Amino acid sequence: MKDGAQVVLNDNGNYGKFSHLLASQDRDYLLSPTGAQVKVSDLEGRVVGLLFAANWYPPCRGFTQILVGIYEELKSRVPQLEIVYVSSDENLDAFNSFYGNMPWLAIPFSDLETKKSLTRKYDVEAVPCLILLQPDDRKEHVTVRDGVELIYRYGIQAYPFSNERLEQLQKEDKVKRDNQTLTNLLANHHRDYVLSHTHTGLKKVPVAWLVGKTIGLYFSAEWCVPCAKFTPKLISVYEKIKHELAGKGEEDFEVVLISSDRDQASFDSYYSTMPWLALPFGDPEIKNLVRHYNVQGIPWLVIIGPDGKTITVHGRSLINLYQENAYPFTNAKVEELEKQLEEEAKGLPALVYHEGHRHDLNLVSDGNGGGPFICCVCDEQGSSWAYQCLQCGYEVHPKCVRTVERHDNNV
Image: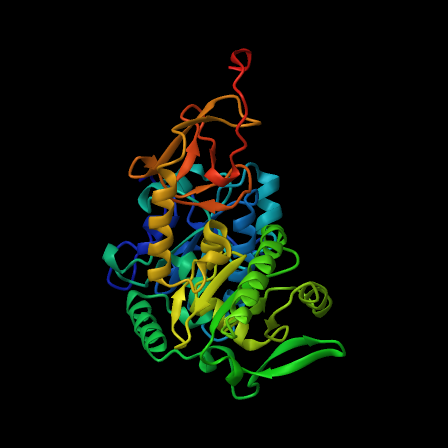
């Protein structure tokens, strides 16, 4: 340590925990939103979150907006909470612009060594990343490293962000799953209905009418670009399933929109394009459902069985892979469809030349060079069998291949 550098001691006469982490030989302070310098030693005894983020990455901007709301609500009644921004911004102007939206502290942009040291210490490989540190503990196992997921899943309920609190929340989740019914998922003390279209406007449909059916909870929004692509596909599949069930004299499938639209007008416009049911815009159960199913991106389709229990949270992938054939989305049905794919794959050529791509595509599968992928033709998720370019990683669903005659001068 350089001569004259300040040594910060805690009440036990030891070096302060956060001073070791956040101060440097020539800096014993952090930046604050007001421009004032805050001593690192002021953090001792507090719960501290280290936010690794960058202005240039959209998920960081989205998560930061959520974290600001939680931070401000907690700080109004829990002053012993603090967050420190660890920037990966490309330059000082970008840092100033992004940090200008944050109500917490920050390591100065110019202190590259401290930022690199923290990134290495906590093995940060991607942003956003939120590391949560407890006061006055020196055991690494008490550090919560998945703070982003914790915030998305539990929000303000996660405080004080300790492993003990996380275990308690997980136990509560298990109780909720074990006691889950369609009624306690969709209804509350103030509302026992969902909305439906009629020729004269919206009408209320009792949640009780849905009990005993297979239900899709469709998390979506008008502003979401991937939703704009998936919604028409889901409408087509929904109508085919309903038509097939009607032919059998059955009426066992419904979809309920769980909207993330930003205003009533957007919700009204978006929902008007859909043939199914919806929770009212802004209903408090929407946030509860997002948290219950840990929804971190949309579109997201959860399938609930006739017994009110969750069948799968991967309804979107099943729709993309199997369309209406995925109904009723059970494990037994998926296993049947996978076996069917295996049989169909036996008749597929091992090598194809696909229109719009300059290399040969090889047929691959799980365990044979394949795995989950995003189809380069339809932009939807796939798994199991695929045609893959071994030279550049291009992958397509077998159903999306447009075989053309190969011309050697294009190779």
